[in-house]
Image (cartoon, one colour):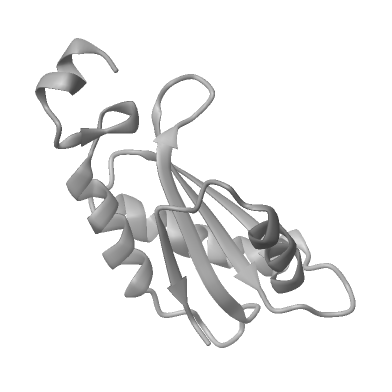
Length: 123
């Protein structure tokens, strides 16, 4: 921990304020997913630096399982919705939006040692 962070405990990873984590939670919870988008089971997020040390919000959108893979064209509207909500909501961290299926997430959860900062269920 650097000297600034030690003196300012309200700050968390990458210079992102703790209140920003609450803002991310609130914004993701308030999203209205359009009916023509893939079915979102849940959304997980973590606020931590990216590989360059910049403040980042990592969002994993958990989609319902289906026989064929989801295409970029199908998930792009969700990416744009989430990135737009975070940016317009005043989140300063860079948003990184990723997708997993429900069954993929179950396997990850079984082996996880570091839980996400937040999880929004949409069942």
